[in-house]
Picture 1 (spheres, rainbow over the protein chains, first blue to last red):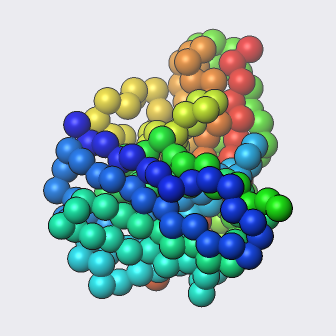
Picture 2 (picture 1 turned 60 degrees about the vertical axis):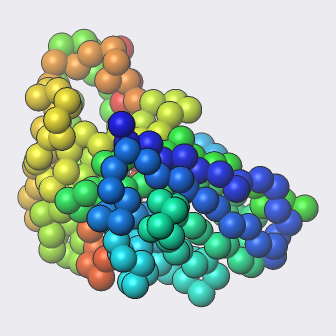
Length: 117
Length: 110
């Protein structure tokens, strides 16, 4: 059974940093492109970032470019999202998702990031 | 990277059919037949219902169908059931390994 389990969320002050984790199991992690998608409270979904299966190519939404870094450790089946210079409007549930055929076929349960002083 | 436009809410009675539209631009929906649709119940993670415009993942009811015309993609739910009440989001590939989501549609079963 495919499982994606996010962690690392919490309360951080504006301008601060946070590192999110996504532990994957039930599939060959190193064969899949992975993404982060976020959802602010009561709002819609926003694609954040994508990383290739090998980790050598990364892509970002314009809203986070230069501040967020996606990475992965295929030996540990883990996806990461390093978030710097966080803003209040980035308070959201952050989901780890697996990409399959230009869609996101599996999602984690999400981890809540709250940016507030 | 502007959000795709969806109507905020759609409602229907059990058994009826409803259609949710998703309007993008020639840079996303219009350029690729790579729109996916997601169903999200309150407090839950989204679930993919349609991918690559009109394909259904294994286990998704054939009451859900997708199509596209120009810069607008559509999701049709036929034989509406109480369990279909949820938020629905479209998502399009936008080139350069980037994606854009729609603004979301709340479906209410009357």
